[in-house]
Image (tube, rainbow, N blue to C red; front, side, top):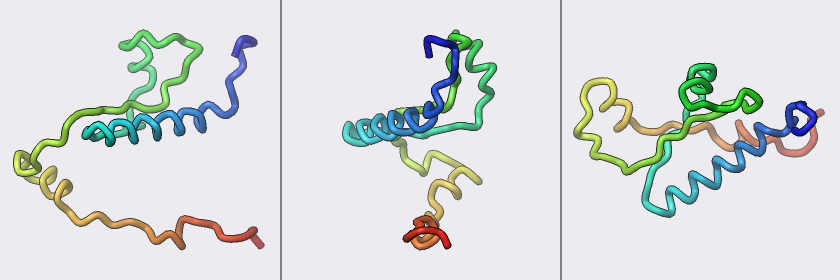
Length: 97
């Protein structure tokens, strides 16, 4: 912000922007891999990000290659059955007691 304060909802805004980017990538036949486990200080330095900006996510966008080109644990992880939580474990219905 102009006064130097951090916009309280920046992470929410970033999430919405990332969602739209990923949807557009998928629409164009691309895949997107979102990563938050990166060194923010290094990213800020290497990418010359202004000090008043906060890196939140790195996104790799490209085409999907054949999983058969992978080996070992990477192949196993790529071809493993995806397990997702049930919606009942993620969604809050009604007001908390």
